[in-house]
Amino acid sequence: MMFSPHPSIITIIVIIVIIQANTNTPVDNVEKRSVYDRLNNLYPNFLSRIQVTGAKYDIAFSIRGLTGSTRPAHRLIALALHELGAAAQARVVETLFQGHFEDGRDISDEGWLISVGVAAGMSEAVVRLGLEDEDAARRVDAMADEARNVIGVEAVPCVMVQGRYKVGGYQESQVFESLFEKIRQAGEAF
Image (cartoon, rainbow, N blue to C red; front, side, top):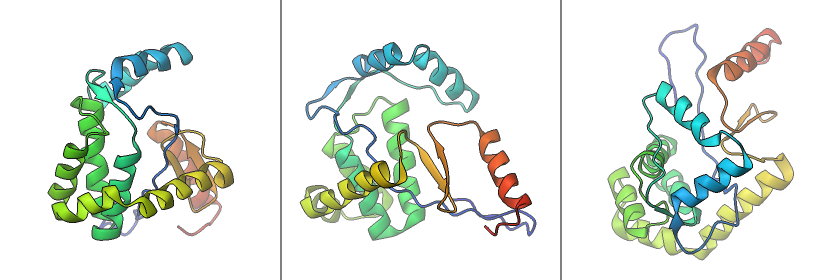
């Protein structure tokens, strides 16, 4: 979420919609290294690209540790929005990303997810119930299905601007700057 007190700067409000890009992630944990090796085989130079890009922003991607299904983390992200609002949801996502991508945390570790939810301001009981709520899980899955099948989301992150401009996958800031300028020049209101 970004707000600016300067009158000539456009205010952008970000709402994170949970989309599980890969629904075939293993239920059992696997070594992150094997996941990244597979991605590097599919997309040559994948690892070097993310490491070089991350370094520009002082992010050191870690390929150590375990990983499993991201589904519980998606439930936590949805729960944070429902319980605490968009700003708290953004903090939860930031904590999850840092833990998983930089600190080697397991995105499917229930204990860690609970601690992230509690640190965001939810009670442990609320977080546990949210992670166990199968109806909530189905709603999160339905949102992801709609994003893939209706909107055409193929990569994450996928940013929708004004409900019609789709920017998929990792992109440099110039892509967004060009899009915002195009919208501004067309006289479309933000």
